[in-house]
Amino acid sequence: MELLQLQYFLTVARCEHVTEAAGKLHVTQSSLSKTIQRLEDDLGAPLFDRMGRKLRLNEFGRTFLRRTEKALFELEQGKREIADLSSPEQGTLELAVTTASTLPGILREFRKNKPHIKFHVQMVTLRDMSTLLHRGEVDFCLSSPPIQADDIECQILFADPIVVAVPVSHRYAERSSITLAELKDEWFVGVKKGYGVRDLVDSKCQSVGFVPKYVYEGDEPARLTALVEAEIGLAFIPRTARNPQERIKYLQVEDHILVREIALLSHKSRYISKAALEFRRVVIDYFGAMSKEIY
Image 1 (cartoon, rainbow, N blue to C red):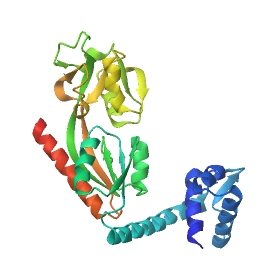
Image 2: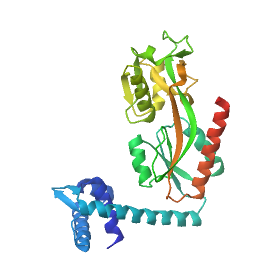
Image 3: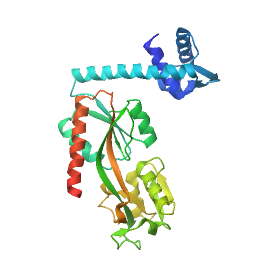
Image 4: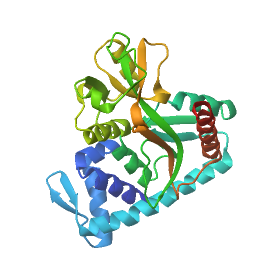
């Protein structure tokens, strides 16, 4: 059994499609199929049920996948640890976020002490973040809401009130606060379902008797305030994402029933590099200072 066979098997198992897996691995479909066949011959059992180029893991495959993921995960942590020991001031931080409003300030602070560390940031849904975390493919996640699981380290950092953004021409613009029930006939701009703020807002609105009507749903939270300013619709915006440069009025939701928790998440078994430890310190200090300013 070869390491290459395990890496190919893992990709095919996650894609369950030969063409897609071959594309990700940058190999021919024929070469990939032969490698998987040799692995099955070594194991003495088929790992997939085959339907043309579509594959589905069978009982043998699901059992072997769990072991393969653990084995390759540990090998990857070994590579990361060696790289960190040999070049502690180099490397790349892998980050995933469901909330990006505080990220520029955090990365600016981090770069002051670690200017040579690169970072790769993904804006993802909660579902995709959970997958990345459980596979140990990211150093840290900034998530709202938090994700709780046995293999996930979860540290609540900040309670961020959600406010309602309205254009300055809106009839509510002279107010400082509003109830959710008063918004039942309004049109909104927002992110798509699956993002933490959207799911929280929809749930809270439904609890007071209405489903928000969206005229725009996107993947870029930073775009929402521009759409509000253009009078396309109202928006639910975390307080930390307010844009003071735009002609918008922000209303507090009465009774404080809309508050999102921001958490720092990591896989308990993923190796934490020196750069990652510094990033965690910066994040904790950043939100600690923000809490003092707001409260």
